[in-house]
Amino acid sequence: MATTNPALEQLGGYPLAGLQDLANELRADGGPVADFSIGDPDEPTPPFIRDALIDAVGPVSRYPTAAGQRALREAVASWVRTRHGVEVDPDVHVLPSAGSKEAIFHLPLAVLDPHGDRRAVVWGDPGYPVYGRGALFAGGVSDPVPLTHEGAWRLELGDLGADRLAAACLAWVNYPHNPTGAVVDVDYYRRQVATAREQGLLLASDECYQEVWFDEPAPSVLEVCEGNFTDVLAFVSLSKRSGMTGYRAGAIVGDPELIRRLRLLRPNVGTASPDFVQVAATAAWRDQTHVDARRAVFAAKRDVVLGFLRDAGIEVSGSDATFYVWFRAPGGDDTGYAEALLKERIIASPGTAFGPAGAGWMRLALVPTVQGCREAVERWAEAIDAGRLPS
Image 1 (cartoon, rainbow, N blue to C red):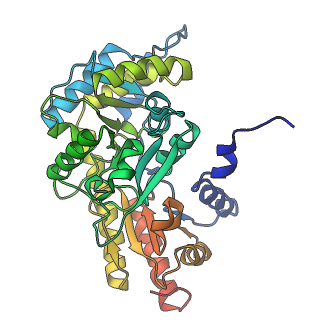
Image 2 (image 1 turned 120 degrees about the vertical axis):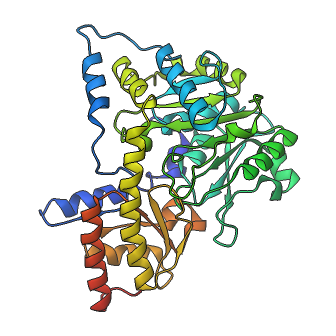
Image 3 (image 1 turned 90 degrees about the horizontal axis):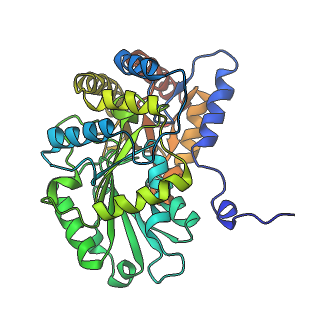
């Protein structure tokens, strides 16, 4: 039998893929299903973005360049300037990506020496599983740091031991945070940048949810760099901001030397978005009106779900931004409560899908429409009143 990469056996299946299989099984019988599992909202992509893509599909297909169309890089740079007040050069600080997931997964291939002394990748648990998986496939070590409700779900690099930091080449932060919806301020980023530079670490900030805020705009790590982006990268995406999950369009912004290295890596991987997707992405980055409208829809969904959880006496933590609501599983068993919800045709993610530190907690992705959220919580409340679910 041919050999295989041992990382595949070590990781097993992708944690949330099984939830999608369950959702498909429930839908097959034609009954109502409230799927709060995968962060892929039901709201349609704005028409002007779809039109831009259609108009850009020409009669001849060409390979896209790894560096991306200049108009797209300029649009990203303009958005960074408008949204964060930060000047970046589209030619040296910006690199389009096929969404953020592949860019996150591939980053260790460009910065991690599998034979070196600093092979660890630090990230917060619970968190996006791709941070650790990318490290393992690159020949490195995944080093998750347990996050807590008491610590506001924040990863503080300065709290880690010197030996742990000395073994790492890369640290991921992700705010607004998946899965908890926790947020941070600019002082947080100042501390992390200072620690990372003191320790010779690359600080990578996954900011794909930064446009899904409710009380005040979420900051970027780029805001604290004062024009010096050495050892700092921000990963941004149109998936959540513009309802373009299936388009696979995002960008990496920051350290010019690391951007140069990634430009060398990416043609070997072949992940550049097609030219017509890049045209649609350019249109999306240049418009803010649709982003504000989507945020208002997410706020309405959030109000429905948070109101229900509050009335039911279920503890909520984080949930200050993103379209995720993070709550303590009644009875303490996140997997057991997820299974009980399935019987009510409600699909939620157990916290352990995002790492061991998520045990006892659960995530709801605000995927259904506002009306779909109302119908789901009515079913949920009925099941609690009937004694089928604890509260």
